[in-house]
Length: 75
Image 1 (cartoon, helix red, strand yellow):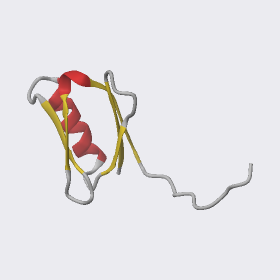
Image 2: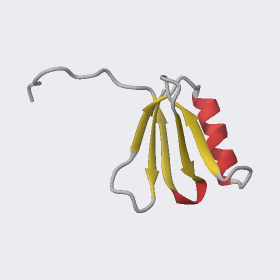
Image 3: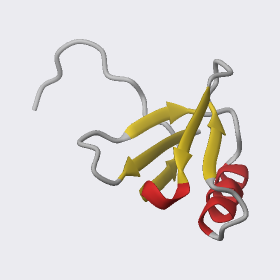
């Protein structure tokens, strides 16, 4: 599952591939935003944890990863 996280006052978004399901990610985001947790905590496919303070979340995009493009493409 590909997850993109926008953080306030940060020029770049955080992009990670997570083994968690869309429902699990959505639940974690909901809990972080409702005050049950002060951090949004997600784990990527390699087991690394990503922690984002919930008051700094701008947006979270949850979606399936697209195919990776290799080489030069034609327009």
